[in-house]
Length: 389
Image 1 (spheres, one colour):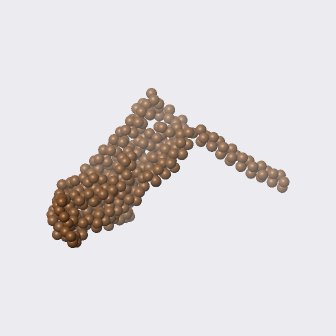
Image 2 (cartoon, helix red, strand yellow):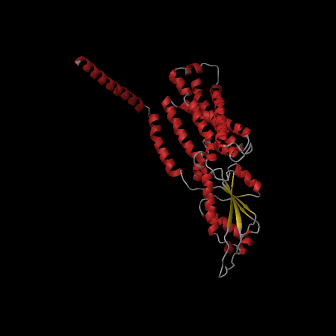
Image 3 (cartoon, rainbow, N blue to C red):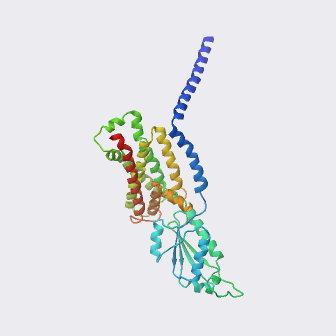
């Protein structure tokens, strides 16, 4: 009995000492991996900065359109009051409803203010009205922008602001209120599911493509098979593209499942061209896969590749606009998000799925994604050239 107890004690002590020894060894390895430690330390700092400086629940630097059919002192005063709120950029003037709809479909603006003919005359008579057309594909900023414009209309004094410069207002003035007629295009009820479902394919493809490509080269180096790949009679670009082809096919399958699933389960079908959706998906998938391959060519270990990938995914979800509209971000932050493939893909997705766009509406996102892909594939080729020489 005593022998059994002593043997059990030795086994228990041996188990604990083995665990501690292995933990010490892993800690030593991690301590010498300075790149991994830097990534781990910088990630919470990055999330703190994003949460404190970027995430907002109020619009900032909102792009908007102005269709002014009565260029008068009253209309200029109304535009000045809108700008005075501090939420809006200088308006982009347009000449027709068709031009405004095309810009809204491309996501180039969030709202369109239409000032009708004889606005100044109606203001003096006490019955002025204007129309506001808001892009409802993104419900939160649409509702907020509409509310801000309604507040401007409520405080606007059309009878007084319509007087010519230098004219005195009457001693007793009861100007009629400015009536604001609101319309929400692309999502009249401002329902939330279409907003999230439209960009869900982009979220899933980002995770899938980075998971498939970020561990490829570094895993071959760790397993010792990278030298066999080097011995093949292929150039760097051929090797990389060959590795990406199966992932491209798989990405199209996943995209089809997401789009058809959203339609069957929730009734959210693409309102625009399916061909445009397929064309847009290709450069996005290639750009995201290329970034994963670039990470794999830079990372020395699989752990580094995983942390760099996660480090990239987190700001992508925040800055791209898939979960929080990028219209709620400062303008400079929007420019930073423009370097992320997911930003342009979600713009194209919402143009096709929510706004009914076609090939013309996805031209700019597809071009930007192709440019990102070209830059990344050039960086991958540069990284691999010394190793294949």
